[in-house]
Image 1 (cartoon, helix red, strand yellow):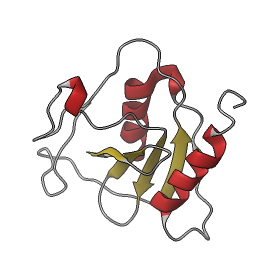
Image 2 (spheres, helix red, strand yellow):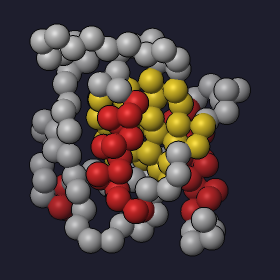
Image 3 (cartoon, one colour):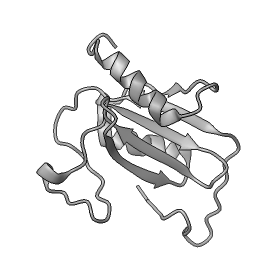
Image 4 (cartoon, one colour):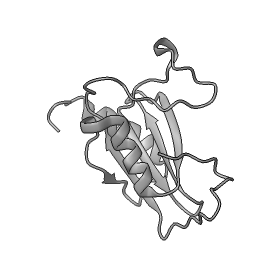
Length: 132
């Protein structure tokens, strides 16, 4: 998995998005060891790590690449990562969450705030955890 800052790309790489993408996926109970992607200034000390996500948001728009955002059902921020493509972002989420990652769902086009929608969506669905 390759992660690059938004303003730097490997030599010869061009990035383009043909359409806007707004997806979310719920995260079920993790089995096995937590896979964390370390980012600057966030230690890998378990007590100080960002919280485990209940929902993952994938957004790609006119900017190059795609972003993954992670939140708990209580709205706590669980981190974000930038990826060259939507497909790479999805592969990263699969690597990070394995079988706990539920199927991707499109965010309705009428939704203005994808982040708020995803947190409320997760909170509503997780009250019935296990039935999905």
